[in-house]
Figure (cartoon, rainbow, N blue to C red):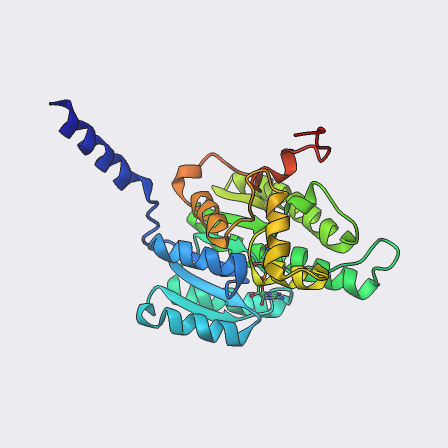
Length: 282
Ligand code: NAD
């Protein structure tokens, strides 16, 4: 009678598949929209206590309504993560409320456009402040609690644009390269304390940011057509969902990834492995 035994085996394996982060406290920056929102949902689904930091108070208000029945496991703060005083204050409030921080997911970011000759100093500085400096600032104020705990995981959302590039993304691409270097340097600083730091490098992800880019570049096409075209450039034939980035972030905070640190982990449907020269007839 092997069949019932096989079913039991699958049931037990399935139960182990979901990552349980009960008792863990996780901050997600840029948590109100896009990849950050996907991360908030996935950490919440994994039973973590989640705090969403974002600049956008009206999107945070919507998010508060969504989780209104779960006040003990979800809260939010309006924070500009490129401002040191605001970051210090927000992290202090999280520690006062929860006493610990196990995960920091740095998603807040902005997309800017400009070539090396027409990018202004203001755009360069704003891009670096929001995309790269913010990740240094949040780690600066969160890591001491993790060091005391002798455990914690920091995840920085970078981009495949830190590895490969296109026209008119000078400041954005450079800020993403800085995130990978920040990730490696802080991983080495914090490893001895049991704190891990990794970067996630997504390809195209369906978020308000990507849809804004599609609107800017769509010409006569609809946004959906542009997103389908961009998806076709990824060997898997589509762009990602923010929840798929959230799944990887949950893994990187869990003990399932306990020996991974300092890495730049690509999640791009194969975008960065493909030679862009297509053989005739293929
Ligand atoms: P998004 O614009 O859809 O969401 C970003 C969130 O960050 C927004 O809620 C915004 O209010 C918040 N934010 C911006 N500046 C902030 C600040 N100073 N303080 C606090 N919050 C702030 O963007 P997204 O597409 O979800 O991108 C999230 C991250 O992922 C960014 O770092 C982006 O560069 C990166 N990324 C996105 C894609 C993509 O295709 N969408 C691909 C690769 C990497």
